Length: 207
Image 1 (cartoon, rainbow, N blue to C red):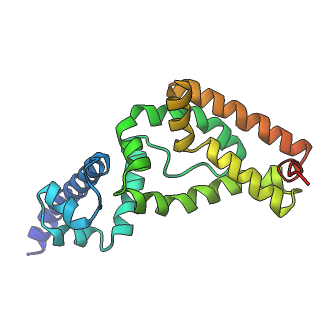
Image 2: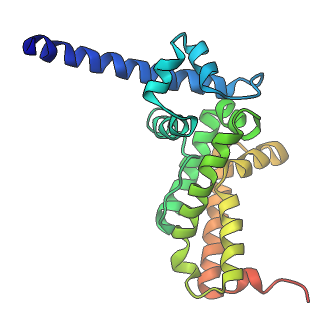
Image 3: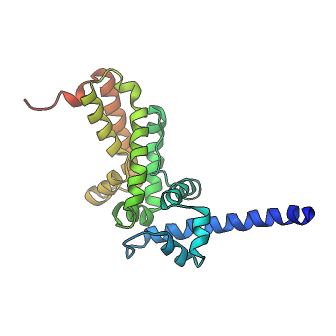
């Protein structure tokens, strides 16, 4: 009996991993499907042609499924919109790659941005991404007032986000490489300005 369990264990583990991969791939397809209005575990199970209880066995809640899919997407799709570096140098260095990844997975990114079904996924990742940018800017906003810091983080968060990529594509006709270079330049300029004038964002309000 022990020998059989030892023999079957690797096979069982492989089957479980194959099921996880199937769930992630199906979730990706569902997110990119513009006709889907609500993203649910039963829908993912039906599209993947597996039992609903099987999905729940791997991911007891939709939040856990989204979190695990985010890690999978970064590893397998090179989609970086789900998390950002938490250092200034890392953020500056990553922006061109980030924008290129948006181009490479255009349909998926646009679905995440615009699909009603993807709204829970956007909400789940937004706070984490904003916190990463806030941490990355800690060095250059250390001397800023709370108001200046909040405004600086908001502007710089926008510059590295997928909505900025979408706006530059649609309004200026830039591809991911061009938009990434522009965004990286803007982040360098603004963070250099913050080092010189920590109150910059708070000092422009009309009185």
